[in-house]
Amino acid sequence: MTRETQDTTIFPNTLLVAVEAPYNKTKDINSYFEEFKNLAKSNGIETEHFMPMKLREIDSATFLTSGKVEQITEYCKKHDIEMVILSEPLTTKQERNLREIWDVRDVVDRTKLILEIFQRAATSAEGKMQVEIAILQVLKSKVAGRGVELSQQAGFIGARGPGETLKEKEMRYLDTQIDTLKAKLEKLLKVRATQRKQRLVNKIPQICLVGYTNAGKSTILNTLTKAGVLAEDKLFATLDTTTRELYINHQKKGVISDTVGFIQMLPTKLIEAFKSTLSELQHADLLLHVVDIADQNWDSQIKVVNYILEDLEVDAQMLYVFNKADKIEITYQLQEMMNRFQPNVTISALTKDGIKPLIDFIETWQPDLQVRLKKEQEEQD
Image (cartoon, rainbow, N blue to C red; front, side, top):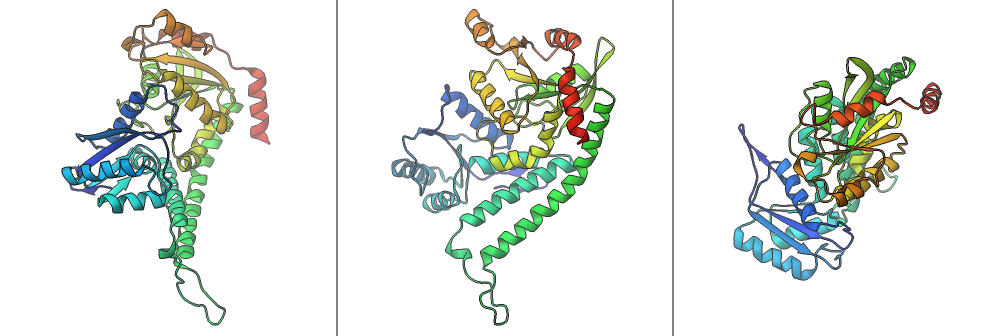
């Protein structure tokens, strides 16, 4: 998708195509489009070429309807476009067909864009392995979707009949790579499991920050613990789980962990790869669900996060933390909407004063002893 130099990454002339697809139930489509722009920006891509469009149906061969495909073809020719990035996931066939029709160097879909962002952002050995596993799994699905070009047989084995096809050889290679990475990752995760078990034995409560990407989780962690975690205004600035001791008014309340942010239509292969890290949430005594209240789609983002937590079978006490209150006026109507999510606090994580409602909650909070006993039993089993 990119070509590198020593100093910077140079991207080809790029067109961003933001699609309002029939399955997209977002209330504010413009916010969804801005999120797509920010995804590209988080990967270092800033371009003046942006084309929003609405689809009423999906074409199995090209995803876009013939009229939309032709519209983009003309735009690419006029502006010498070399790469097109779509806001939606594509099949292998759709991606290949569009690349040929538009005569561009590359067509990048939502999955590939997010995977590349994760690949750039991962810093720890654990994070890098998880991203690599996700990339290999996506490659595997793409190989599975390729047709005749990989169906030729690679040769014969004696007189036993046909040997492996090229497709089978490539699939077997990818499976081997995935299994190798998973084995290495398992060793790293055993250390995390030992640490978690020790916290349970020592009755140390665990608090986890969860939420939509860029909601302010890392900023909250930094304000509460002076952790010094990278807290940039971009999507997926944090991938690696960071855990710090948490003191409130000089009293230790437990440990608090930051986690990777979620996003709608997060590639399923990526969720699968990060499940091992996200399983930490299953052992949390308290989830701080951080919500960017200044984002017009905040209620939809809550649904996205809760859906993923449900898929991960996370069942823990939750506090909704409405963040970035400094950026918006909290009207009576907005407060009524927020009150649907209980319990909750409203904060601005930038300062100690702004985060005081959260500090006050944690200071008086006590973990559910019955739940803790159950988790201890599960850990022993």
